[in-house]
Length: 506
Image 1: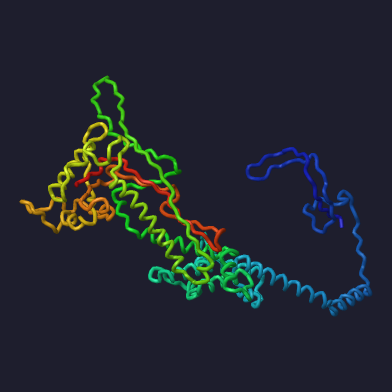
Image 2: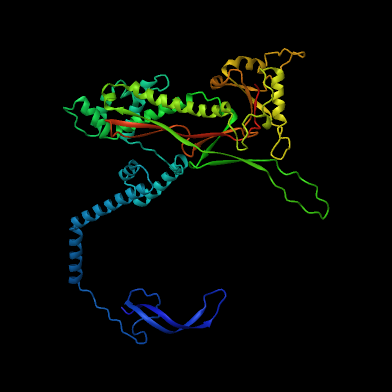
C-alpha cells in the first residue's frame, strides 16, 4: 500500500491564474501537514510513497492448505453467530426508536395515545416525527388559540365564613332587603351564641365544657371574627338608615369636601370686567374682579354605643341593629337641622347683614302664596345685581314651603291647576319644584322661600371631611365594659355663601 491521504493547513499561497468561469489557480508556498494516512483509494492518484522509484510486484501463490483453512474458519464463524450481541443491539435500537417517538410527540404537545399508536405500528423514528408534525399542524388550524391573560380572585375560608355570618345576621334584621345565598343559609337560624361557638370551633378553639358566658367572652374578645362581623353589620344598618332618611335641602345646595378642620373661606367672585373697545394702535386696559368672602368650618359629631356579652348571651340582635339604625337617622337629621337652621335663623353674612334683608333685595313685602306674590319674588331674584352692580338674571327653581303650605304650593305650581286670574292660566305650572320641609313649620307655618339652581349661583354650601362623606362607624374592644364599643362619627359643616339665589316670600 503506497497511496497516501494528507490533511494540511495552508499558510501562504501565490495566485497563478485567474479564471472567470473556473476556480482560480494558486501555488502553495507554505503549508503545515496535519495528518497523513495510508489508503487504498487516494483523492490524488499522483501522490504516494516512492512514486519516483520502480518497484517490482511479486505475487505469492496461494497454497491449497491456506485457502482451505481460511474457508473452514469463515464457515465456522458464519455457522456460529453471537446471539447475545445481536439481541442487545436489537433491544437498544428498539428503545431508541420508542424514546425518539415519545419525545417527538411530547414536544409537539400531542396526546400520548398518538405516540402509542405509532410505536405499535413499528413506525420508524423519522417517519413518526413527520407524522407528528403533520398532526400538530392539523390541530393548530382547528383548536389552538393564542394564550389569553387570566386573572382569578381567590377568597379564603375565613372571608367566606365571615360573609356568610354577616349575610345571616342582616337577613334576620331585614329579610325583605337582605336575601340569603347558600353561604348565608349555613348560619341562618343560629343564635348569636351559636354563631360565636361556630366561629371559635373554626379557629381551632376547644369549647368543650365552656359556659355560654365563657363562649360569649371568648368570641367577643379573643378572636377577631365576631367583632369584625358585627362591625360590618352595624355599619351597613347605619348607612342604610342614613341614606334612607329624607333630606329635602340637597337639590338647592352644593356639597364639597374639606381636607381638614381649618376655616373654609369661600370667595364669591363678582361680574367679569366690561370689555372696552380698543382702537387701532390702542392699548388694552387692566380690569379687576370684585369679591366677597364667607367663612365656616366643619365640626365632628358622634356617639358611642356598646355591644356587651349580655347582649350576645340574650341573643338580642334587634337591640344591636336598631342602635346603629337610629344613629344613621340621627346623623341625617343633624345635617338637615344644620342646613334648614341657616334659613330659619336668618343669620348675618360676612357683610353683617341678615341673609334675608331688604338691603339684599331678597325680602319683598310678605304675602301668602299666589300667582302675584310668586311673580314679585321671581322678579326680585331676576333683578339681583352682582358685586359690580350688573344684573345677573338669576331664575328661581325651587319653592321651599313648610308642611302647612305644601298643598297650596302644589296647586300654584301644578300644570293641572288653573290659577284664578283673568287669563285662567297658571304661569308657574312646571316652573318651580316644591320642597316641603317640616323644620320650617317650627319657625313659621306661613313663611315660604324661593331658591335658585346651585348650578346657576351659590346658595348654601355643606361640607364633609375629605374621605368621610356621611356618617361612619368605628369599633374597638371595650375597656370599661365586657364587649365591643361602636362609635358613630359625622364630620360636617354648612354655610350660606350668597344671598342672591334666595328670596323670602312671606
